[in-house]
Image (cartoon, rainbow, N blue to C red; front, top):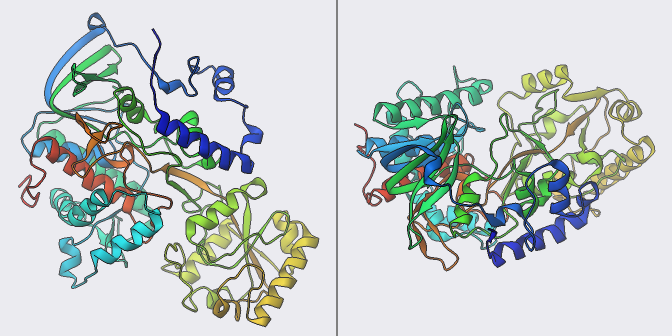
Length: 545
């Protein structure tokens, strides 16, 4: 039986997204229709009269297919930043907890967490204006955020990060210069940050188990359970032995990550990132929670979803180079300048996304060290415009080949495979604008243009190509982290956190809140557990003590 979902709102949004970004050049290398793509790749095709395969709700799994039934209070689906913290908080709140994790381990792709008004920050004597922070956030969101949801993070992230730090005494964070961002390094070495953050999440999962949580690895969730009213009562997972039915009397919390490893969902909700190299070590972010919730009648943020498509960290084998956000001259493989280099970080990554071979080069001369820190040319959403150890970081990137050096511009073009004739003309024109003190071509800040000439050998080029980190749109929620239906009402019994949840980001990811994605995951993971247990308004200051 074909149970097709009527989802006019997100289908309309998806069609608009495809009509915009795909028309800009992405559809040329893709099949003409999703059905064609699905049939050619051997995946499940969309049903007649639908556009996407997930529009067709699967048949309910029969009782005689269930090999195990578990009664619990909270069932958490997914074990990343949101899932680990949610499991720890739920178990330490005294609840009976089951976690379904599709892989054999905790998964994370990040390294830092944002939180406001944490004890470490306040003890350092720092302050900020949360109303001003929200203004900047809403401006970048272009009005698409739910202010109640965002302010839940701003108002409560501090107590949540304090709680997690208190529960993991073997892991001491470093407070970054922003004051609201925490990283976990070994011996204060940033090179260890990804590995150390993964170990931190492992420790959080162990805390959850110690408090009584039952974590079922290699058991992906496949269907939500609902009663006659539509209230979510549990979830079915699939283990190696067969289907496992988990009855959750207090609620199911979706912490299943984003949609960027599912080509079809990426095409529907963030098509601009199709074809961009993924940074995921394990391509497991396939929108599992989104799909199950849609089958249950949930609502989704309309397309396009917010993207995290960055230069840093890079997927290129030569590794990272500093200053990816510095507004030095940028040229494409044709040797042409193609935009204002002083836009927000995501904006100039997006510019490069549409260049030939998704490739661009920053060009600078021997004075790179003087040009990097000089002047106040920051953008409200700037990123990667400084480095902790300029001389050593530059030398290291040069040795690895992440920075290319040449004695002449001609040699530099040859080494990088850039069209030489166009490149020389572009640099000559750029130097004219520098000498004139005004960028008549693209409008880069005049103060910056007065000293940023490319005139003295040696000359340098830094290759930049975008990498896919995640999509950051999801299921619509309220400030209680309850998943909503299309009427804007809670489905009942279903919660979402991390990138499975929406109602938060808008048109641009706010990089001025460094670590905001994991900060949201931690905060909403913990608060979703507390909300499901009826404890949302109670502080977590003493939880687990």
